[in-house]
Length: 110
Image 1 (cartoon, rainbow, N blue to C red):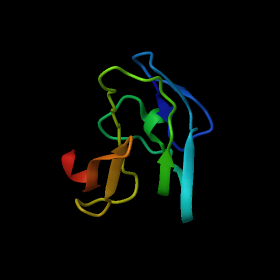
Image 2: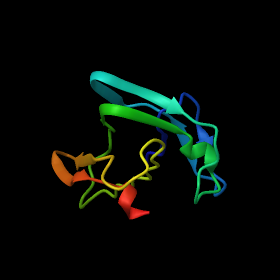
Image 3: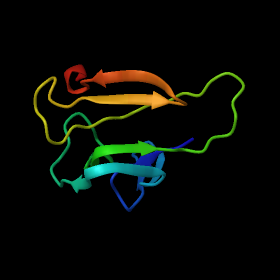
């Protein structure tokens, strides 16, 4: 299992006890990439520290996993720190070369 604190050089332990590791296993593409940190409280969470970092731009994660007989579960916890309206931030998600979500706006799913 991977729990990664994206955009951070430090790990984080949630109130529920889940340990997140510092950001790793990523590759950036293009010139406009970076990380951002905010100190403001994050709405709808008690784990502000987990959600106060972000990675932006074009990037991929390559997480080595052991072969699984049937499937793997991928869970993304997404926090938008910049855009404020539906349709302003779009992203695609792929795993093992299969597109799971293409050009989706996640802000609208609050």
